Image (tube, rainbow over all chains, first blue to last red; front, side, top):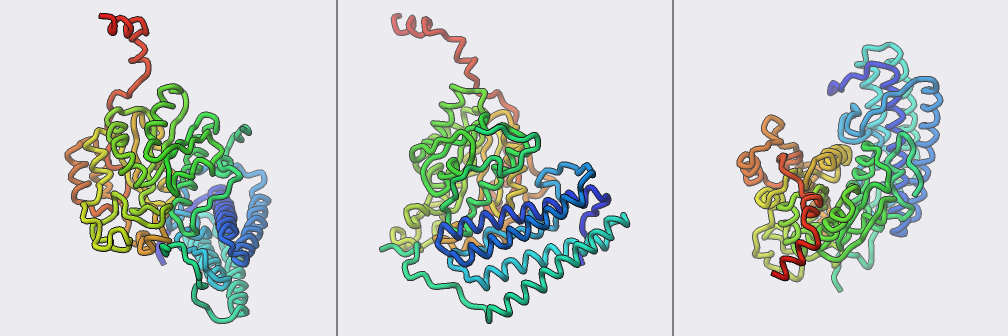
Amino acid sequence: MTKPQVIATEAEFLAHALALEQESVDRYEELADAMETHNNREVCDLFRKMADFGRKHAAEVERLAAGTALPRLEPWEFKWADDEGPETGEYADIDYMMTPVQALRFALANEKRSRDFYALVAAYSPDRTVRKLASEFAEEEAEHVTLLERWIARHGADTAMQDDLDPPNIVD
Amino acid sequence: MNPIPEQPRPKDYKSDVKPVWCPGCGDFGVLNAITKALASLRLPPEQVALISGIGCSSRVPAYTSLYGFHGIHGRALAVGAGLKAARPDLNVLVAGGDGDGFSIGGNHFLHACRRNMNMTYIVMDNEVYGMTKGQASPTTAPDWTQSKLTPSGTLSRAFQPAAIALAAGATFIARAFSGKPNTLAQLIVLAMQHPGFAFIQVLSPCPTFRPEQKEWKNIVRPFPADELPTSDPALAALHCQRDDGMSTGVIYVEARPVWSRSEMEKTTIEDIEQEFRS
């Protein structure tokens, strides 16, 4: 396990948790729009559904944070393991011909990173309240992981990218 | 334009127009970073103008709630410079691609660096002309053979944006990766706060015509933090020359007088007319 930057206060933790969900929602909406533009309706709907889940989680965090003055952190000041929040999928991992199963795998990877982030905070924070909250959040993310794994199993084996019979990179 | 909230979020700077970029395109990350930078700076949209040229990446003004001008091919910097001269109170961002900026607009690029007007130029560099279906651009490696127009490669040395910006006199030079939008947002903030011409070359993969660029995320790494940024042009040049083009961060920062309209205003119309009469 790589030792993360320490999140020491409840306010700092909640600021991270809120940003994690909000960034994830924004990204899923952005990706859904892109899929809609490129006529991949199934994956578009799936990303919209993921954004809806994220909005609900963000609302839960906001409820928890009510009455707490959260620090305003600039995007580059968050203590993520990488450049962006753990539940924010990378643009590069998307393709306009991706299948719903591939989209679910994309979402699964996001949820796993999120679970691992909270688990690390729970393991390393010096603050007992933060450790407790982070453990609960990690458990919730683990439930999402299990749920997505079930969905993937239900959709059957992984498939190759769909074929485009008129690909954009072929010059006529 | 709607007033921005006290603590704006990046989406407050986005318009209702949805990008038509291919899913996986690096330009999404640049749009994301621009809006994050503006939210960090808490700039009201009406105080910012985003000017572009032609190409996939040059569609970016339409996707923001800022003043925008989708200009003509290669002339984004000329339009941006004109706007800055006429409205020095505006924050002028200029954006476009490598073909637009370094080929058709190459001469404007050189003189914008030299003139040092207070504006920020963001080039989304994917080493290809994407909108016209995948031809070699100035930054394409000479051995790239995937276009029917250059089946034996380009036979030309690739343009070195950072090194050329340095030689031409840019006072803020940085390179970034679109797959790291939060780091890029910070660079855009620094660039916009820099007094003078700030240039950011953003490595922005094209998944459609350069699918091999998906690997960039595993290749990019920061410049050595102990040596850069520098205000020593020789040291900056050394790093630009040594590097394979995949290192990111601020390379060069120099304090130099900024082009100002007030200097020009010392000359009156009467003075100019007198000069023609004499």
